[in-house]
Amino acid sequence: MNFQFTDEQQQLRRSIREFAEGEIGPHVMEWDEASHFPIEIMPNLAEMGLLGVIFPERYGGSGLGYIEYVIAIEELSRVDGSVGIIVAAHNSLCSNHIFKFGSEAQKQKYLVPLAQGKKIGAWSLTEPEAGSDAGGTRTIAKREGDHWLINGAKTFTTNGHYADICVAMAVTDKSKNSHGISAFIVEKGTSGFKPGKKENKLGLRASDTSEIILADCRVPQENLLGAEGEGFIGSLKILDGGRISIAALALGMAQGALDAAIKYAKQRKQFGQPISEFQAIQFKLADMATQVEAARLIVYQAAWLADQDSTRFTRESSMAKLFASEVAVRVANECVQIHGGYGFIKDYPAEKFYRDVKLCTIGEGTSEIQRLVIARQLLGKK
Ligand SMILES: Cc1cc2nc3c(=O)[nH]c(=O)nc-3n(C[C@H](O)[C@H](O)[C@H](O)COP(=O)(O)OP(=O)(O)OC[C@H]3O[C@@H](n4cnc5c(N)ncnc54)[C@H](O)[C@@H]3O)c2cc1C
Image (cartoon, rainbow, N blue to C red):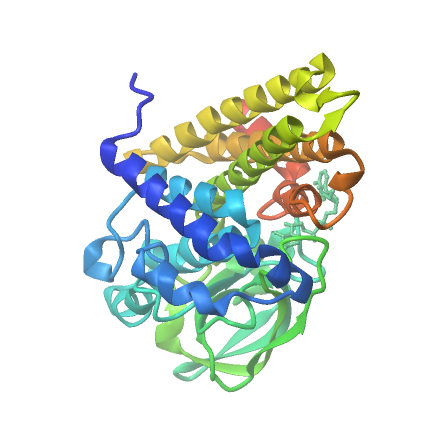
């Protein structure tokens, strides 16, 4: 067993940390307050290869694995979870669905510009009436000659307003339930496709979370992604990888909150001494650091498994997501507590971590759904 990152991985972490602290850090609160999608840093992310981390170079990607991908999401999210989720939805949801299930022609046409960072991707599974129960999708796609006519509405799509390419799930055969749901690649500018309401959120406010409206949306037959009827089953496989990125998002924010708490505890004085001298504060920091380290192990273990490419890693990715997201919520809570009243105001990063981390126990399957997935795997149920 080797727990050491390679020299290249350590260098990657250093360069992303430097970029995140230097180019993202100074703007985090301004973007958060204004719910500003940081479109201006997308070219930098592209240049660093972070919009195609897990894809082979022949498809415009960086040719790296999930370990490097987790390093990237962790380091971006340590500074700003919004940037973390933007990159995560682009890579491991939209682009990865095309990579895993697309034809060669679809990969050349859509994956290459996504992985190069020339286009932004989104992935739409959730609907107003189909969240945890995503198999209850209502959006319908009807075949009309060499086109599909899609009608319905998606909700909570990350990058929805900014996406050039959206992978959307729709029912193609109602009689087959979840085996009658197919995936489609929908391009911005397609007639009948438009982003709807942009959500006003508790946290991750610089990321875009939007409704997607599909009204008589005409999608050519060649944009059916994967086999007809396999969109939902494919989505579950995509979520295996997606959950590793939410786990990495949680890990990064937990580390950011821990770093902020240590910094503050050393500088804040009460009763004539830094509060870090109080054992109550030291114990909090020790517990936070221990939990973050345990989360790091389980998240990188899932990433390592994903890189082995041989098996499904459903159970491990769900465990990583469940554990890391719940750790992040607890650590961010203690970070606010260590900051006292200053944890409640926007001059310090604590309150933002506290708001942002909550998404991790909800997105890509709530903690309750992760427990269901893990239990099913343990009990050998489908
Ligand atoms: C910021 C943000 C970004 C998102 N990005 C995307 C995206 O890019 N693409 C996308 O498709 N979706 C996205 N989502 C949607 C997200 O995946 C869903 O919100 C999530 O799956 C939960 O669905 P829901 O909100 O409908 O909650 P519900 O399913 O209504 O759940 C409500 C509560 O009931 C519980 N519950 C539901 N079913 C069960 C059960 N069987 N057993 C026990 N408890 C249960 C849940 O755990 C939860 O506590 C995003 C959401 C947010 C908030």
